[in-house]
Image (cartoon, rainbow, N blue to C red):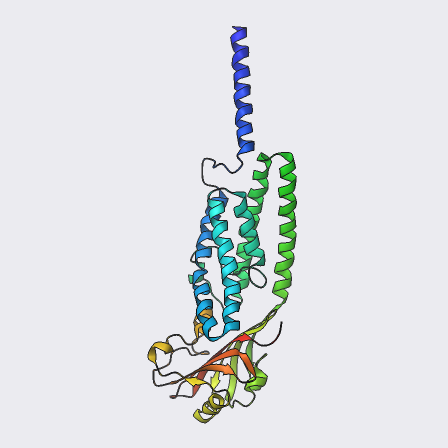
Length: 322
């Protein structure tokens, strides 16, 4: 009896040792249940697929404005690829998936990846350009959850591999947080009112001859590397002043109703107050698009409402060397 019990205990010990060895050799093997990393992996995969419209827009824009198109591609293609691979890696429990998500979150875009990993949150939360900071904070929170899970799974590796992975993990976290902090410092957001177009941030010198009446409401996002601007401003003007602006900058008037639907996308994306920044115009109103004469890499779209003289303009582009 004692001999049988001793053999049984030895067999269990061998079985336990063998199981532990298998886990050490296969740290990427799926475990029962759904992990936090797997759930986040599906979210990241969806975010990667969501970059496809940005990539397509970059390809289309590159035909007309190579600099702006290249900027869109640089913002969309690397991040989209990293997120796609990272999402698949997390779903299939591969360590490479963690690293792809870290790289995309920290280094894709200026100051980090600002499109949300949480699905459908854009439908419910949007308070202008500052919404990006909230989405980035949520993404960093999910990365913290991934890093905690990643650190725990490293216990299944050999000691030498544990040290290597943990060194890379700590280094990426430190460099990533530095990148996000520096990148955020290079983005300047501003909104308010001005009395003249010449006082608008960055592009005021290019619009100093544009005559308006009353206050100009504006929202702008300026990046210092590359040196760029994305801005929306609105106010009241006259037909004569709008025609003078269009002639001075060689703006093209668009009369095709199909083209009108593509105007002022930033106003809709930021969901700005329609009473302050009108976005609904009739087919008989004036739609202009072109580049600023003194800033040839900056595109301006302007829609002027003949009924009351209200206009809304959108500006986007690179203002100078980075």
